[in-house]
Image (tube, rainbow, N blue to C red):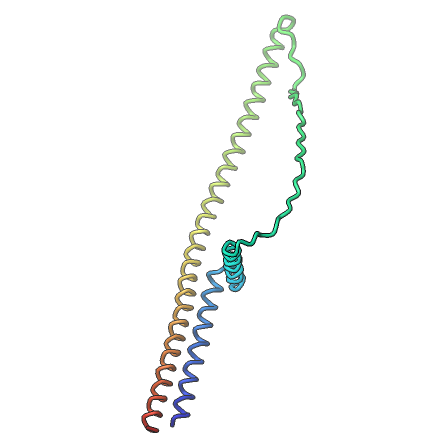
Length: 192
């Protein structure tokens, strides 16, 4: 009877530890974003050892080891560059208005019409690009909102699932310890 109770307690404790470990691992994996669990712990321990060693050196008045630092002179180069803008025209020079006034007026009128059509084409292209960007922006906002909703639901589900396993594991562990203690008490009472 005693051996069966101790075995049952050990099995409950083992199940509890396994469930708690799996729940902890699941929660860690989902929320730590693939960060190593032991590396920060090792760093904290190493930092604590360094602080203790530093404090012990201060207490024992032992000087620290010297640190050699090589300093190289900085080299600074400054190059001034002169930028000269050049303006080029796609049109031939205008006729002299003193020589041929109507040809000058016709050429200016044609150039103004060409500029106007170029500006209208650019405005249409800009309006089309702006509409395309606004459509893409709206589509991306919708996708991000949907993705955010999915991620929030998944995170809550995973976090709660991992925590549930941990609570269940610790509960099994507690029940195993209580069963083991009861078996030990009953055994001592039966012997005594």
